[in-house]
Image 1 (cartoon, rainbow, N blue to C red):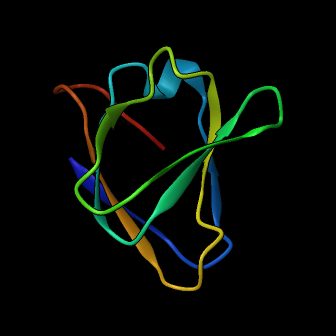
Image 2: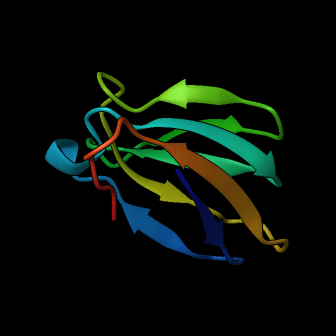
Length: 81
């Protein structure tokens, strides 16, 4: 388990093979899922918990001014980022 800090304007690519088993929780701020077709996805706020598997997301993006934090939980032996 680790915490991902997304500063204002930051974007982290979601590579399906690496994020396959990751469960995420927004612990501060808001993040937007960036979808594979280029369309903006849903905005997830504080307390939102989600799997990225099957969402069609290609990135986590913070288009807001405040730093967002996402707790990333993976099974033992898995590695994200």
